[in-house]
Length: 229
Image (cartoon, rainbow, N blue to C red; front, side, top):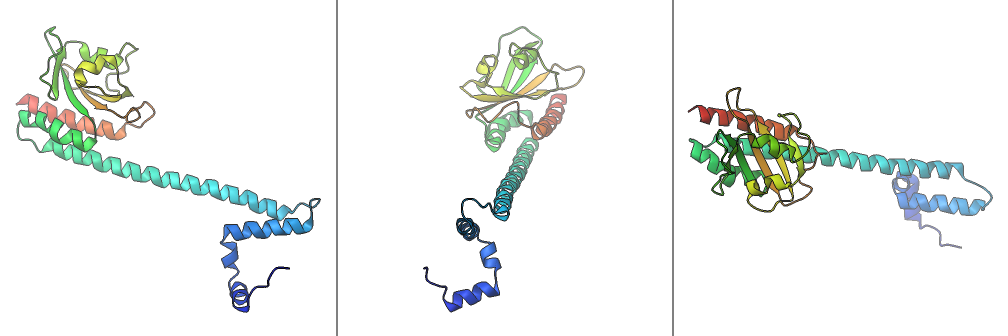
């Protein structure tokens, strides 16, 4: 025989039975004790139903936590893009704009490399001084995006593992990259913003591109403004 509950504990449980109902471990113990009392040949349907409901509650709580986590990540991503956009708008000349890409925007976006690729009318090889601006021969942007595969539409953002096509553009080893095509107008050659990360999972085709698309549109408009001057 087990020791009976003391009067104070018994009175408290009688006054507020929810104390037991809200404690999963206690409820499991009570159900197990009831099943043991009934014997192996008797099935407690209520106990089985409670167990099924408990599993369902666990799944719902897990889904709820996932939704909250995704919401926080989306909010954090939005704030990051907003800070990056503000950094694009601060420079007072084109040279400062290019410098800001490397010194301000790249750290805000937490990427190792950020390169603005622009085509030249001449068939010169890839040219760059190690800075954010890289000049490539005409037709290179399409080949960079395709990377040996069927090219997507020109306005598509590409998220992928790092490609050999962009190794010279990054100027250093990266594991994944984002390619943001920039349409500078009907009379201008295409341009491309290339981001590189050492994290292989940072950019992947399964990820959403809404925030990156917004950032690319702002950068495109800012860049068009500087090119007109």
